[in-house]
Length: 86
Image (cartoon, rainbow, N blue to C red):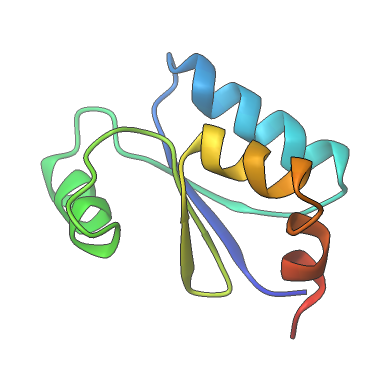
């Protein structure tokens, strides 16, 4: 299973929704809390092509976007194959 990384803040409901979906699918993920950490937020923004909102989700090094993007991948049946790719 590819590494999953999610940049979050503690108060973000979209972060909670994305983490809940990943947890429901049994996916282990690395969570990086960018709240109040300018360097981590800049790192996230650079990796996410300029996107500054949270969450920003990466699967196997591929930027998949935010919570809505993650849920859309799931709705189209594209998330599970992506999570299983080596």
